Length: 542
Image 1 (cartoon, one colour):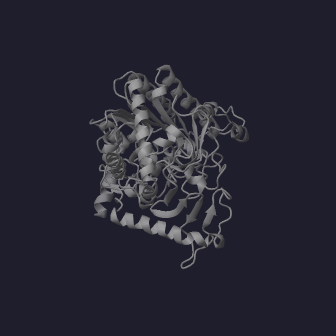
Image 2 (cartoon, rainbow, N blue to C red):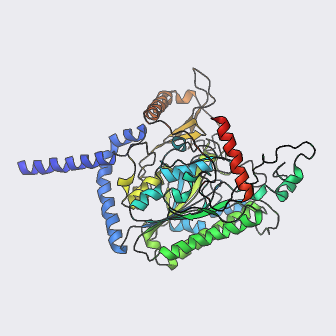
Image 3 (cartoon, rainbow, N blue to C red):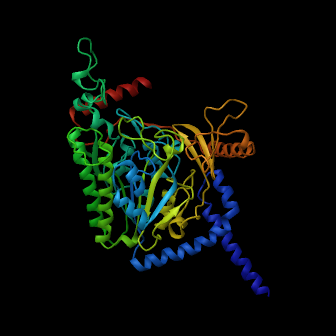
């Protein structure tokens, strides 16, 4: 009897120790409350997960490959759901099939705009923590700090081949470049799609840009010839540890070429690494949008450039899936395909709110609740629908777990991402989070807990306004409530206080500034002029 008691004691001590190790990653305060309640249960489940992952590794001879596809500005429902295809007047059959053969997320939360979401996916941290909360345009002179630890760095430590192609939008300073942030090879754009699409005569002819080209500028009294950022760089490429080179100068024609170039780069990486002894991580974040109607043929009932872009994206995602199957590695590859935030509703005749209210830059569901799908043949049950809360930050921690690389996640800072491996292996109802803090720029705008949401900005001092929403009853957030949620006033206040206390203990990194285009070997003359202009700006500000 004594021996049995000792064995039971050692068993439970082991579980507790595993739980302590799991908590070794510094999470936000709200997660610690969940761990206090479910830590022992999750530790038991983690043992089962480890067995499953080890069995898969033994079967395929290496850890799983990971492909993360992410694109800009898409309203939930516009892709992956056949019925909505008919409503919107364009088709996405490959993403629809991905949903049928894999997993659909209904509560995938991102940051409200593209640069922050990309920083969040790379670091597993709220973008405000790394100073990456602004969607900047050239000249920027800022970017992702070198001391941030990216998922590419974590997976590289675990022996993965890593590559990044297409839209990074993580800054134009040398330390922010993707090949300096852990990727073995990279070709990527420094900014978003608007400059090459509209910053030229054709864009101004369509009134999408005003006053950029020399034809449209002040004629009689202009003095400063360097004020407009004519020297910005659209796309660069490099390998880890090497200097970068500009690929193509920024023109509409070159931008259109790059969409296909990036696609082919992603396919080529899969072909080259499919039979490699090491697994691979591919971040393919395509520049989807070409909203300039000039030279485009429109074949959809929707009749817009946006719809054409969506159908091309769908074909490209299909080509990635087909290549994985062709190489015989789809059963050892997790694919995530998702938008980075809601629609940019300011883009005329292009993007609209669909299911949810709000759009890019907005704390409402339409800005942060995105289309997202996953496929892992033989692992994810076909047709799985996830109603749990899942945040884009969770991909960082989950990818690390799948790669056996959790030990490389830094322990000196808050990691907002939660290990959600259980969701992919067991399906709906397995999320380890039921909350999300929403920042718009540097401001804490709203907090979500379970099905409820409280907005923090725009209220009245001393008394809450109609700032509470029931996201099941009112998914479009049309009717804010107050009196019905007096019970939630205090609990939400405590959530915010705990969050603020953690932020005080682990302060945000200020936005990192430096001279742009460092480490690029082949600067054009106008780019050199651009650099000198920014240098003078920085010197003046010191």
